[in-house]
Image (cartoon, rainbow, N blue to C red; front, side, top):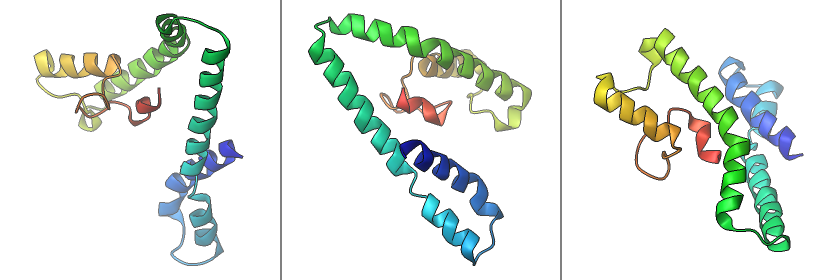
Length: 131
């Protein structure tokens, strides 16, 4: 159910500008727009499962973080490099500050370290906050 809510939210974000102002399609799009509840449900369930796992199996917190980085970081780096490549190909859409050295380089390093949300810098990828 949560996955369908999230799908509905993303569908609505893309479809809303293309729907007529009135009618059943607009009503359906507005109903599907509650997808953020699916994200909340995912966070609730994952927090519960992670907490339960940590309480059942005694393990150092550093080991837990290291395992999490091993699972998440390869995919994050892949998407990060795709974003940087696209910003290089389409410079008018780039979020990287200019001049590249030192402002752009420090911005990319901060995003690579997953610091947006921890410190006040705009994220390169808006969905990286969920990691």
